[in-house]
Image (cartoon, rainbow, N blue to C red; front, side):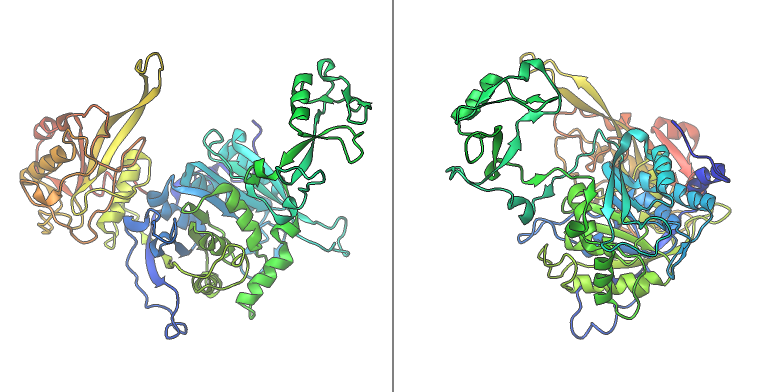
Length: 616
């Protein structure tokens, strides 16, 4: 496959790996304003983010999916560092990514640099695309807007990062209505939207909801009792001798397909359609027949097309009007219309899915995702995050009526957290920053050992992070000859973390150290977790024997991930339980007081904190 080459390309390909992991610190929490609160933001809270970043959508009696405050993050900071900071918590969790990066048009914009040298622009985009790919779910997709200045180079670059086979479409969006008469050569009227799947074998798209204009094409000129219908072509764009024959119209006239075409149905099917009154020969009954497609029989939507006109999804002028209504004092230079983002989210996501925009700009993606019941993460650098994005999103949760609000019946609700990048998790010597708490380090440890994000569930208040499984396929000879493919889970190891007061004994010399007493308690916990039971709910960890565990500062709230990992510690029904003694323990701690022989006997591998945590 052809690849791009440019100055500093080798360095750009390794930059993402060299970016340090940083803490994410919570600045404020935002909920719908009351009159008394409208003039002042909530008080600052600079608590470092823990593994609770990952939350499942919440179902309510009134709405299938409710957007929770903890689900939505507005992050201020460099997007490369912010993406790296999200990786331990959201790797493989994002359903849809939309980004509107600088087009490198050599123009002067107040809020971002759009005048990079070509090689610099490629070096800027590459590591960000690499991290974005890691954050995507296996069935996720990424949508990138661009124009002709860098668009064709971006296409080749994305082929290399995402795989040429995962390219889905190049959508052409009509961004202008009036031509630019002072253009030197051509007046550019469109942008590109490159669409890639993480894996086309896993990705599927939704249909685009039908519009009133599309429904208006359905009529009922013959008063068919089945309702309104639309005529559809009965020919195919190729000549086939077997399907080139005469059809007699009600007027007695014989008609054939046009030159180079043939009927799309055999004679017997044409006869069946005629009997069922499914053919339309025109008002006089002498035209080439068409197939009647009834509105009641068509799908709920239409297949997405690759040309999006401004009257369907808005244009630049619509976008500027929307932003002006929210902030008349200072207009963001290059916003996107809410209808454009709505269209792509309709195709790529469902309510409750997680959407990410790492070039948030004026905040449109987050605003639209929120109104549509999607969870969201938005990243924007500099003061612009606080001066533009935050006020706009506050107005969204307060129920602002602009943009797509009326179309999606948005009246307000939900909330979000405003975050900023904090200190590096590890210093230059590999030492862990003193502000790092249990859940944060747990996420880094889990990602290091399993290559996946640490997500939901688990045993709160214990050192247990989860069990990593592999899933193998096997063939069953059951069901009288049917051979369904079954998934067989095989536990690889369970991970335990002794850190930051997770043990009841918080003394530095003891609380994070693997002693004989701690090992006994871990083995008891391990046996309880992997008890041979079909139950998916582990027993109360407080009932365990041996050394007691309790929730320390930033106590655990995490569960297994990894390749085929489970959110529940118990074996799934139908699986053959694996004895606890056969499942290795991987224990992280600050020190170990036991010898190699004792650890081997207990099937334990010990790793030292911070030396064996390689999250830099």
